[in-house]
Image (cartoon, rainbow, N blue to C red):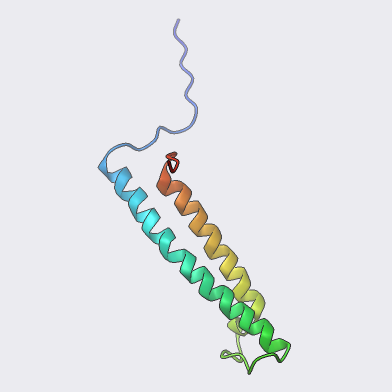
Length: 94
């Protein structure tokens, strides 16, 4: 009797998987500057609350709060981290 145990799904192989990984790396490269811009807007919002700078550019609505900008920056950077890990596909920098 032969018993086979399969753990997890098999990995994609071929040109489509490489294209997906390249796309993930490209998007991850764009998310880091977006996270930096969101963090800068969050810092500006904090500085405006302490009256260290002029008024914040967005005066009303959801995006007028610095917490939203810093939370968004954290989410964008986390997404960049995840896409970079997927894009490397187990390969490490040497």
